[in-house]
Amino acid sequence: MFCYKVSGKFSPWRGRIVRRQNSSSAPVEASSTTTLSPALPVTVFSGIQPTGSLHLGNYFGAVKLWTEIQNDPTKQLITSVVDMHAITLAWDPKALRANIRRMFIELLACGVDPSKTVLFQQSQVPQHAQLQWIFACLTTMARLDNLPQYKEKSATQSDIPCGLLLYPVLQAADILLYRARLVPVGEDQVHHLQLAQHTARVFNHHHGKLFPSPQRLPSDLPRVKSLREPAKKMSKSEPDTKSRIEVADSPEQIMLKCKRAVTDFPAEITFDPETRPGISNLLLLYKTIRAMEMDAVLEHFRAKDKVALKEELGEAVVELLRPVRENVRHLEGNLEFVERVMEEGAEKARALAADTMRLVENLVGFRSDVKSVKEMFKKPAKTAVAVG
Image (cartoon, rainbow, N blue to C red):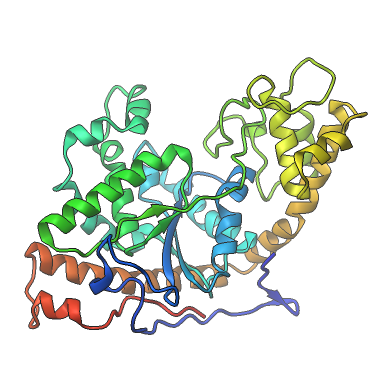
């Protein structure tokens, strides 16, 4: 687990922006048909909404993967706290400010390393909104109307905000602004990734082959379900806080939430996600935390009951999250460090975004640089960031 505490003090991070030639984000290589050199780092983009504290579902579904990607020399991870997405429905500004800072603290506490990852706040990079507008002008209403998540969320709204409809367009801009080639997304976001692929094709067809076609980055990490409604995924926005284990929960809170987790009536412990989703969710969590095969987990609990399973799961979660809780406490006592990470991350992201937008603005006719667009495409890439 990555930790910022060194000899009782926080090690200051001094990020610097440098230009690096021959990046995988090179405009000349931006066609979706281009074959990448294995020696070039591949850009991976991912984001998370600041709508509440990180929970185990976020940790296993995204953050743990990010900590692995950032240590892969063949990849460059760009991670955004996507606060603009968090206002598509009614929001409280005071709560949003607190949630944004909290999200940075918890991501750092979980091991996201700003010396290896470009970690930034979405709204502090205005090019996201600029590119979204250009993409919105290339996207039809019919295509957006048919997206499953829009249908689901708009069904409960009497007055539907435009932002809810345009949410996937902003998501496409988030990804393509950094010319990302890989995006780790869950099943519920696949349609939005497909929209990003479509948007890249449409832009490239009409204005020039600038954007790669982003592909889904698969993961074998589990999709953690709600402790109260195991048919649903664990969620930050669920009103019932007992439905999720947050990464900064106390040991007492964790044990209580595990104890109250929904299972079912049969006494024996079996794994069957279709007919026994509650107990299967707990078994899958235990398997993942203890790094065991499911057969071994079932054998371990063969002569035990559900009370024992919940107790042992609680103990495993407490042990897993202990360093995270410690890191959270340290970071809460050093908010200047957190602010510096936020500022320097935004600076790096703006540098990357500015390179892409300069090309986009030339291609769509917003500006004319001294050199022709053709010449710009020929020169070496200047969009990669060296972190650390």
